[in-house]
Image 1 (cartoon, rainbow, N blue to C red):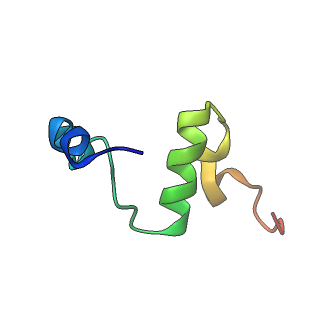
Image 2: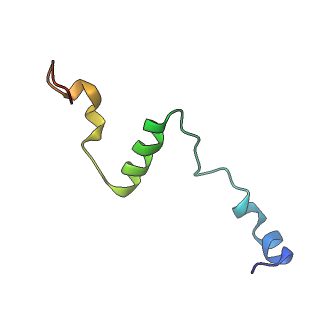
Length: 55
C-alpha cells in the first residue's frame, strides 16, 4: 500500500488533470474509448447511413 510519503512524492501525477477529459455525452465518452482502442468507422455517424434505413 502507498504511504503518505509515496503519495506526496507523486502528488503532481495523481492530481494531474491532463490527459483526462470530461465528455459532454455518453457518445463522446464511448467515441474517446474507441479512438484509444483504434476502433474506426464510427465517425460517419447517422449521416453515413442511407436515407430511410433503420440503422
